[in-house]
Image (cartoon, rainbow, N blue to C red; front, side, top):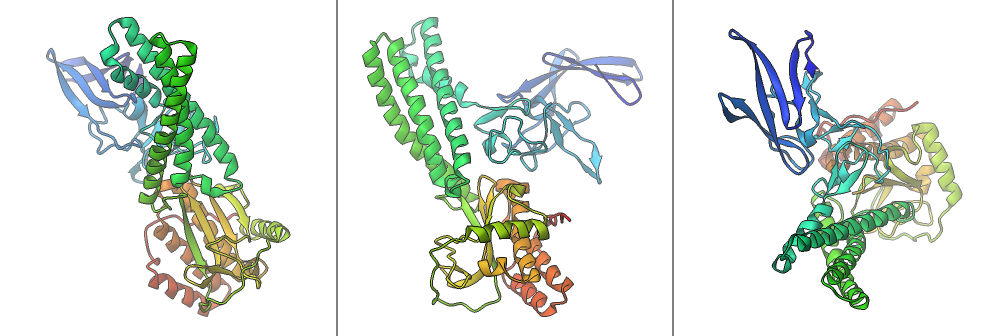
Length: 454
């Protein structure tokens, strides 16, 4: 039973919905309400028993991450996405709009939890269903499981429908499909966890076609083996014949899983502005220097300088590795952004100098790379460059795949200009402001400024 602020009964819960209480001129009345839910448990329609008939008193449609197209009749029912109660209290003149899943609160606007993942399933502990709400289901905020388990069961039953002649045959097909889906899920989950560890060495494994192909091939091969062998054995095949069918299914699953997983992940990342192949996009902080195609690339990397850079970043910016999903803060260049023998970093494709870059991965992690000369340079230039890229890391960790680089650049350049203004270097402040305006990064969006840690 749920009571209001006046200690009067509002409604009672029953297995299929609620019994609401209303007071009118005719006295107190009670109405039975029934929830029509989807596979996630989200209430799509509430039917109320009025005068002996059921009438739709509330309808709700949702985007994949749980944001409703529009809210209606919330005074009748607030148990909406995934069957959880919408927190409709006002905060700053706007509805809070979170859902209480029990273990954690969830914001469908951001597609993010507001507490860390107790099962540590993903690189970013705030991701909802691994950024794939059409594939995973999380009922209480503790653990996301794959809807493909049920999909695998349905698919196998559908494919073997002509052969199913009895309830026992249906159960066998359903069980084999469920085991195939489950095996594929756990294999993919294990590979994803291994990739999370490997991203400390190479962030290129964390997203894009490469990531999707690796996870998809492993998941497809395992699911294909279980499906092929299981169906063969359930049809009466011998042990050896079942193994042959299993390996044949594994081969088909490996190829189809790699192609499907790679294309799906790559296209999704590309649509969000990341690289199709590795799920990375780069934010540059350009220095006020001339372009040049004549520089000698350094083949060495000073790890001691990295240690100094990380200590200085923490001392002057209050940020360290692990904060805001930052995997590394380094002076090591890349093929696209090499470091020359004089300690400068370059954009190798366009032949101009950059002071620092932020490599954002579609997995919501990133790497900050700083030119060695900047790492060893004066405090004002150092904080302008490093603070600029930390702002990107902050926004990237906050918004995930919804991160809009132009909006983040606007706030980052405001921080750069303020750094130089506060240091009395007004000419540099004006030059960077002008550069931001020319690139279309000034006054864009409404992203928050990064909280400065003292």
